[in-house]
Length: 229
Image (cartoon, rainbow, N blue to C red; front, side, top):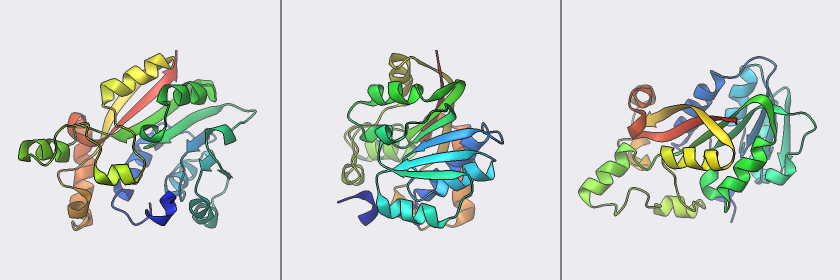
């Protein structure tokens, strides 16, 4: 069963992480930049890159997601059904985006090596992933609901998570792939599980997004930027 049958990126509470990550990435995107977005899903983040003036090659393995993305009618966007091997391009990219993807691949270092080859000389690799030290995980440890910070939840298992990496581990993966990290920030705080977050009003959730920048070590997501060494 594919993602599209069990998960809607545009209605799930995770859309708040998607939008906050997109906003953070767009601070680095200039008009005319070329973006390779791996795991573009329904194009929610893609739309933000287009609004920032970029052209985008979006790749995803779910036909239903790409149908929604196509329906957005975004200018300067090419959508490809497939995986990493489907994103070959004669021109290098100014940005490669791996948002919430690296935890699902069998060989994360190999993936990082491959995507680094797609970068222009001064290009940036944007990598985001759930933070094992997120507030809700710390609460889970304190209450006995979780046995370990790196524990993969039932929800994570359903969505194909192999394991999650903290910020230092992500830096280590990048270094082994010949990449140097140049920036790190937190994306949104998550004091509660997703089912509780979904019951909160938008003003509160916007406050959680803003707070993630103040306490990155406890944010829901780690966001790192790498350059080729």
